[in-house]
Length: 226
Image 1 (cartoon, helix red, strand yellow):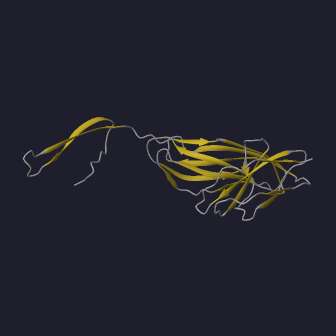
Image 2 (cartoon, one colour; image 1 turned 60 degrees about the horizontal axis):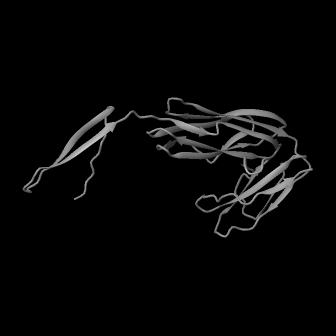
Image 3 (cartoon, one colour; image 1 turned 180 degrees about the vertical axis):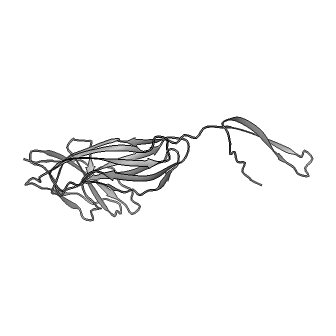
């Protein structure tokens, strides 16, 4: 027979005990020694990054950056609400409430979609049952009048069965990529209409399967805008 022994401490500190198994066997009762230590529950969240700068984005365009929220404590954390503020800022890929077990992470995207020229600032407020709640992510970006150029991208199909593709862009080679498509791309091409004159852009693509799993970045492509 197999059974479980549970330890549910009501106070901090070390404790010990025993489980007696009484039967008609000659050596009854059989004794199982048990011990454990109760520790204080800690509920903490780590947010990376805590500051998002979207740079210049053309009016009517959209640029997204990812955020990771991790439970770094030893007890479950309940995220009650995640709220964006500021003109042009929104969230994608998240809904609250949500519970995070210790070491579990939550990933979501923050989008900047300016409709008029000018700088904009905002926040993402994360309310939870942690002692430091609410946590705040600062946001900034600048809407600019769209340039006269576009970038047309094409890529080879994935060798696996996929639901679609994402396109990421950065102004720095090898890092700082942000997703520029608002929904999965079913075709093997995409046109970026939100580039600025006199800028260099670095593009990569990813493939996404039916379960939402995303591949690693493709090779990088460079577009030089005169």
